[in-house]
Length: 182
Length: 73
Image 1 (cartoon, helix red, strand yellow):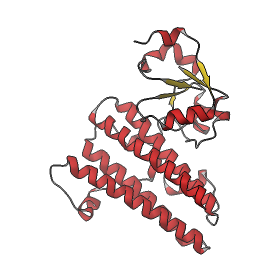
Image 2 (image 1 turned 120 degrees about the horizontal axis):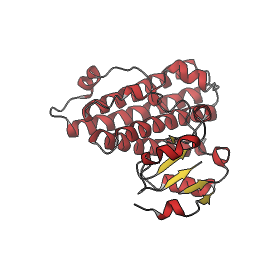
Image 3 (image 1 turned 30 degrees about the vertical axis):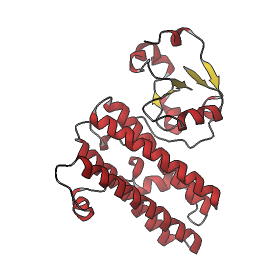
């Protein structure tokens, strides 16, 4: 047992928001491993679309290209999920085939685009604020996958969700590096 | 069961140590326990934190895996 000295006020990393059951309706616990990958793929897709639409609204060329870069990162995450899906699926599918099987209900972290914009009132023309927003979304996604994984416990689905959560942790670290580069 | 961890005082760790511990472990290897009230949790919590408000803790100890390190705040 370790006490976080200073509590949440001393925590300087990204935080997640919302009640403990936020977004958990995306994972009822009855999904197969294949279905979990489909949900995760759709969440990454929602975030990719979000970055693309934010890029269209942004005024500066640097921020526009940053949004494009972030959307491309999400596509990479999607491809990794498709690869993981094909490893366990009975029938291997192409990306186009897979996309017809998923439905985008929300973005990563289980919130809709409008909810994110409302919660993180970021300036879409500031590079640091854009990356900070992206980090907040990744933190939210990490939080969702961990909570969902913890709820499903030591099951195949639970282990897959924890695996995706570990990936999200890496994504968060990558965005931290990107922040240091600008 | 690691009973000793329930009988010994909790070690306090600063942000850097906690961050290093979280970064160095897989997400299912550590329990991050938030013992504040739901409204405080809702406003902001460490990603992946499990919420058990302090008044409920004595009745919900069974939800915490005693085999895993617990970071509590």
